Image (cartoon, rainbow, N blue to C red; front, top):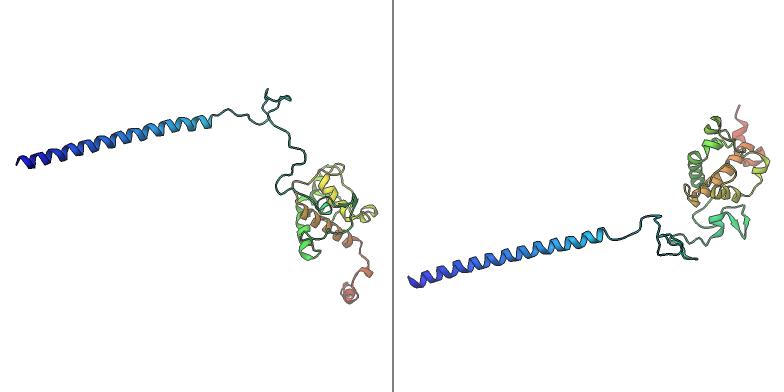
Length: 214
């Protein structure tokens, strides 16, 4: 009996000791979390400069540092001068730049029409005569695409104007990506042809379709 009682007391003492150890571990874990939370709060509230905030560390007093000369942002390497400027060796080009998925065809012209109707027709009108809705409401009228001057300019002229702006027209460099600017330029040429086409421009095999019209 004495032996059994001793075993019972030993097991009870062991359970109490184990429980105490678990409590110590729990308190240590809680303390560690609290301390780590303080470190995380310090990281959240660390000293920093907000956008355009003044700084007395640099000689120019600005916390924002200038871009290192010659640096190029990722994805902004524009080696193809013709595609990104509409020029080659400084001169306006009169054709779609090769490559860059710019094949003249129905798909490109449909894309150009869609982009033109969204970004250009409010001023230039859907047919390109410069009679868009905001012009009818008092905005400065742009020139018609169907004047001799604009019918004879190189194709790159339209791309350059969309890229850099011209007169009262602002740049659309940010709103319209380069490929869509070329699609619009191609569609402008299609508009010019549609309003100034001659019978000689129609393939011989298709002229009978026009002659049959009343």
